[in-house]
Structures are given as C-alpha cells and as structure tokens.
Image (cartoon, one colour):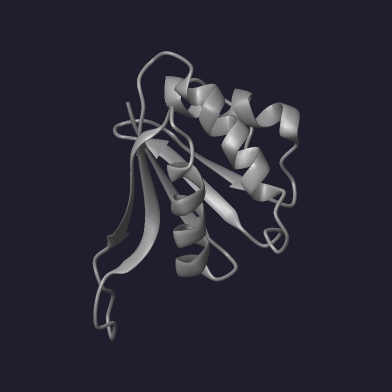
Length: 120
C-alpha cells in the first residue's frame, strides 16, 4: 500500500524533509521518499512537500501511527498539519495541535481503509 503525506503549515519543505528522515528510521516502513508538486506560477521548480510511504499489510499502519505520534511530539511541530491519503482513497487532515495520541491510528486506519472518520 502506498500512502502520501502532504505537509502544510510551519516551514513546509523543512518539515517534509524532517518527516522523511524520521520515517526512514523505521525498518518496517519501506520506500519512504520525498516528492513534490509541479511548480506553481512564478515558482522556479517543484516544491518537495509530500512524503510517500510504501508498506505491506502486516502492521505497517501501526508503525506509521506510532512514528507520526513521536514526530509530532518533537519541539516546534505545533503548527504542522498533515494531509494523509492513499491512491484513490479519502484524504484525512491531521492537525498537530489537536490530534490525540490514542486517536491517530484510528484516523489513519479510516483514511487508508476508506471508511469515515472525524478529522483531527
């Protein structure tokens, strides 16, 4: 399964780079890459603001949720928002200021399974 995590708020590119490095430290997550969107009007190149993660069915979601909880807990993450989606699936936005640690896995599971969940 491929999951795409777009970073908004704060310093978008720096936060996306930080999240990419953080997730690459998880052996259960494979194929963690930093990608971007095409350049907008007046921009010289693409903006690398999306982290792509590939993982199998066996426990990868729990690892991703745990890793995101720890990453959010780092200093200066309070202004960060993540948009998490899978190809052809729903998009869930997570606000670092509002997400509760115990809810993160359920929110991710709902987004990746295509079921309804409240945004955090």
